[in-house]
Length: 181
Image (cartoon, rainbow, N blue to C red; front, side, top):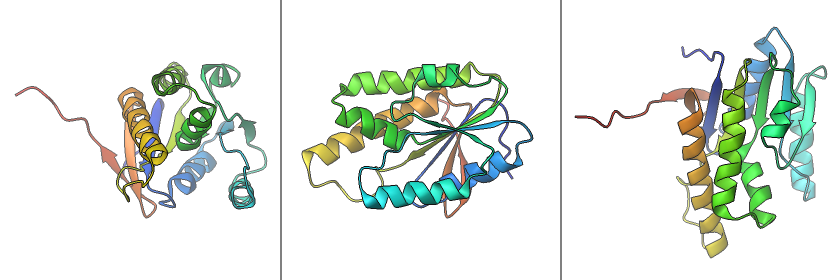
């Protein structure tokens, strides 16, 4: 069984794969303070219901930071010893994307967030979706978003100490391939 330790751990997987459930279970096992950074906004009734269900799954004593554009300043306001859960990069990217932030600037924004997480003393658990393994988006907008999130996820994985691919609530550790012969 893989252990999550100090540093940054990235949880990546498809929709409804169990990523959020897994990080909540890890947060519940943490003996110190937990700070949950939520990037979701309730743009419609379905999303409001999803947010509500996620809220019910989290302990009431956890500190909640709702920040749809979470960045380094978000983490600077968190106790350095706390376990931080960022859920999720997928929605953070969407929020920046629809705020018309340039694609390269979105990648840099998430890179700065991840770098701030790396600089913390407490562990940081980061959730994101893998959207490049499903259907090919029909629209230019959908393809641009998929490609942007793919770039962001690669950047996040590069900066994370550990990356885990989550399928059916189970995690597989992702390893970097050595490029020397």
